[in-house]
Every structure is written in structure tokens, then in C-alpha cells.
Length: 553
Image (cartoon, rainbow, N blue to C red; front, top):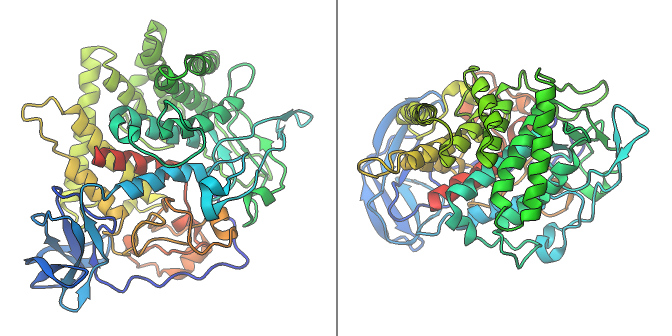
């Protein structure tokens, strides 16, 4: 993520004029369906494109919502299950069009997954696969090792991290973990997916073809002694140019224990995923993972990362590495069954970090998920981690129940990348249901709350925006994303997830747009300049892919 400015920004599109908010992708036939109004209404109808009424009802007031600063009403039309294209009408107001049907999420799921292909670095994106968003080969020159600038390294490949051209190990590991766990938990959805990327025909699902591209870069970031360099970037972010036109020198920045631990974790996880398809590649991943963990054992104290003087690219710094080491030990134990990893995992288990967290700066939940899905560890530990996920889902459910939007954020949680929190909360709901699948009645308790988080992302929010480019009639189109700005194509690359509303307004453009008293959910602009609101990132796309897969499963 970055803070560069534009010389010639594109104009922002007009804000949504309607006051009736829906999931613009649509609703599955049997799912709960509701629209949110920001005005009092005594009656609403659901009509098709020809104006024919298919459902009518009375909206229910839900009270004042602090996050949006509005008094809300909710219009429930769950009983309408007939497939078709509709919109909600209430007096002179109407919603955007949406679809009811079984496969309404598929286009968004596919575009969010293919967005990783559009983030590829070190290769040409040809018209055959990229269409009008094609571009040339980029960032293939050797990078300079920061500590010894006489040494040059080949670290080409991987995914551009965000709206910039940097590549960061901890961010990469987090995105890969979201995708791999989505694949492990909902394989049937990924097996059927076709996003038209290079590398086929293949026995592997498209998600695994794409993730392998990132893994092959990730392994280049490992030093001879097992340690892992934190990132490869230029000293400052490139201007708003196409990737092949970015000629700034690249530097491989110093190792960190966070990057090394996350690398050890995700390569161990990946080895279990690829084993059935390519045992040689799986062996290579495991060898890299064990070497990284060996370095962590040799250096048991936290070795953080700070940008060297003169470097202004994303830092991705953390305050400690306990959760990272826990995740690494848990994944290696699950992959190998070796007692030493179990013992190490136990040492970190009670260190006080969040054991259900699934974000890039807090990864303890991945370690817990590894143990739970593999049934590894003592019954007491598994029961404890199981209960912690369920308790977290219950906490989030209570927040949703108090929100007229069904949103899992409290008003103070609208910070940079707030949509990632919305999406990882959605993941938590689905994980909790997965863990409870052997309950007495077998019915999912939390799925509808996961769907509410997707509703928010795709238009059921006070801005009216679908925060995914290309999804919905009123979606973000001008993210803080260099290729999307520089390609000269008005229609944005599809499938990019915007960071979303941010009360803290950490760039001067955003700060100039909103008075201090603006409600947090309204602190958003579809504006390329507003990087603290409208940047994209691979680890914001990845939980969206997980959430969509889970809701389609």
C-alpha cells in the first residue's frame, strides 16, 4: 500500500442518488434477502425490468445507525424465490437492479479470482488472457541486495501487492493462506471454476495454477540460510505508469522474523495442497519451509522490519512475531507430524495473540485453522480453539444484530482497509459453521451473517457502491491502482476489491473531502487520488474469494 499522488487524477463518478440499498450482484433463491432504506416508508414492492410487481411488503424500522448516521428501515423479501432480474421500489425511490438465482455469485467469484492474474509481475499479460487490460513484461531486471549492494538477485515473478508495484512476503503469505483454506474447505466450487488463465489444461484447479505463480516468486525470496527477505520494491513508488514503464531500481530489503515465519507457514501449507498434483514441487516447498523454521529456531527473538532511510514503499511492519511463529509451527506439525513442531506450537499457544485472527498483521487464526481442519493436537487444545472460533462468531453476530445493515463492524472499526475486516469476519462466520457441521441439528447458524458481509461489500451500504470493480451497475471504477489508471481504458480491470470507508482519512485528498463530523461509513470516495479509501490489495481480494466460495458451496 502506498501514498503517492497523481498529477492528473481522473474525476470521481457521481455518488449514488438512490436511498434504497441492495446487493447488486443479487441473492441466491433460498437465502435471506433484504434491502435497506435511509428514509421512512410505509410500503415497498419488488418489480422486474418491465415494472411488473412480484412481491410487496412493509419495511421495518431498525433505528438510528451510528456508523452511517442514518435512521434505517429494512425491507425483507426473502419469500421471493423466483429467478429473475428485479429492483426495489418505495415511493419515488428505487434500488439498483439485482438478480435472484442460484449462480448469482459466480461472475463476482470469477473476477475476484482472476484479479490475481492481472496482478502478475515479471511476465506479459497477453490479449488472449487479459483482453483490453493487456500489458508488457515488467520488473525482470535483477534486484540489488540492500545489505550488500554489490550483489544482484533474480526475484522476478509473483503478484504486485496492491495499487503499487511492490511485492511483500507477509502480504503474499496471507493472501495465499486465504486462497488455500478456501480451496481446502470448499473444493467443489474451485474445481468447477474456469477463469481463463495460462497453464491449462492441468489437473490442478485454476486457483492452484495461479497460486503456484506466486509461490515460485516467494521461494526466490529465501536466503541461503533459510531466512526470508521482507520485500522487494524500488526506493519510492513508481509514478502512475504501466508496469513495463516502471524502470526504477529494485532492492531486496532485509530479512524479518515475521516474513520468515509466514513463509515457513504458507510453504508448509502449500506442500500439503500440491502433494497430489506435483510431488516434486511439494517436496521443494517443504524443504524451503523446514529451512525457514530452522532459521527461526536459531534466532528465537523478534527481528522486525523498518524501512531503511530513503525508502518510502510499504513497510508492513509488526510489533512482534508470536502469532507468526505459532502459525509456522502449527502448519509444519500438520504437514509432518513431527513432535518438535508440536512442542514449539504449544510454547506459543498461550502468548496472548488473537487465535482467530485472519488478517495480514495478525495471523494466529491460520494456525488454529490448520490444527482444527487436520484434527491435530490434543482434544483439549482442539476443543479450546473450536470454542474460540465459535465465541468470536457469536460476538460478531451480536454486532450484526444491532446493525440495520447487518454489518459486523463497530463505528470505530472503519480504518484503512476496513473491507478486509468485513471479509475476514465473513470468513469467521463460515469457519464457525464448518466447525459446527456435526452439531445436533446440522443447520448452519452463521451463514446468513456471512452473506450479510457480502451484501455490504456489494452495495448494501450507505455509499451505495459495490466495492468490487465490475460488479454491479454502481461499482467502484477509479481505484488507487497504477495499471487501472495508466492503461487508458475507461472500464476498470474487473474483480479488484477496494479498501473501503476509512474514518481516519490518511491522505490529504480524502481529508479535504469529508468534514470531521462525517459518519465513518460515509468516508469513502471512488477517487484514484484517495489511496487511504480506494486502494486495492491482494489480501483484500483473497478473503473475498474465500467468502464467495463458501457462500456458493
